[in-house]
Length: 150
Image 1 (cartoon, rainbow, N blue to C red):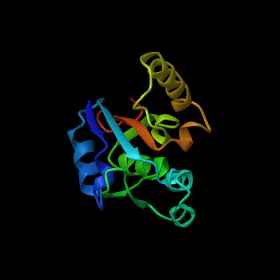
Image 2: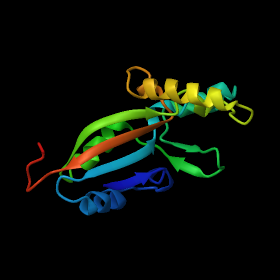
Image 3: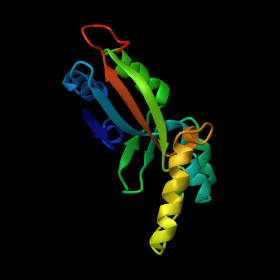
Image 4: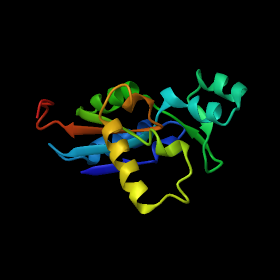
């Protein structure tokens, strides 16, 4: 299994890294990528009442992230196409941080954390919720001997 979580967003062009990740994934192995969701970039500025930024985000693939660093986002379809071009078939994708990314969890009780996790897990698997998540998790399987059906 090859993991790349929360890295692609910091690269201007992730093509070389994606090619390397796919090459490092052995025959029949799993590639796991978590990436910033380009389809939801307008949500954070809108919730912060930055209406001009929210409007601009609808047509953007970049934002200044919560760490104050410029980031780049992907769509599930675009990233799926990129890995498939390297003989890695998409086997599943999930939404990550639909509800909890937009709230402060600093004073949240432990029992609430468990409930939040349960709700997030359920949302991660269902449309339209997973499509609205701040980040997505894409899983692919490397072909075996050129046969991508394995």
